[in-house]
Length: 178
Image (cartoon, rainbow, N blue to C red; front, side):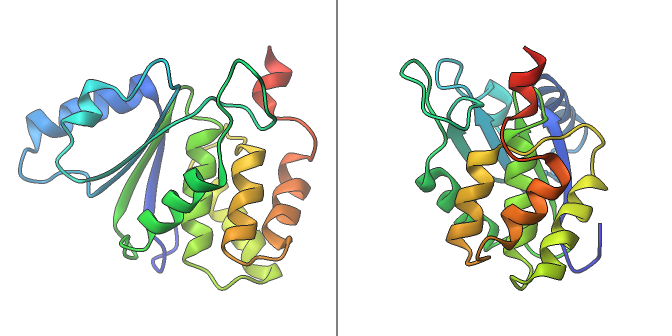
């Protein structure tokens, strides 16, 4: 991760619980500064997230990009909260982003935070994707979240374009695996 950007961990729910538990036990005075926790609405955030001493943003929605009558799709308001949360994250500060599998919603949150720190242009859209991919190998940011992020931050389709050229356009990886 470049020094002008925050550093990240993109984790699954179970891995985040372990990391937060270890941080609380072994480093009680040195907490993880920023945490974005995204859980399914029927699960809620893990207890370890609720006990986290640093700044925490908890969001509740399912890992879908298209409306479904039985599931909660991410909303523009959810992504606006991530953008607002990112305002207080300084270069070099560490942020943990977690969701259930650590693949889609958490990587979209990290990409949104990265993009929020860059000037919206074509070169930086690709830079944001490259930075994200340097964090973790297996990711596929949630398409709906990225569409909202692009619009909210004024990327004029450039962030979505870089996303599509890297991850494809129509469907989310998790739906293809099911």
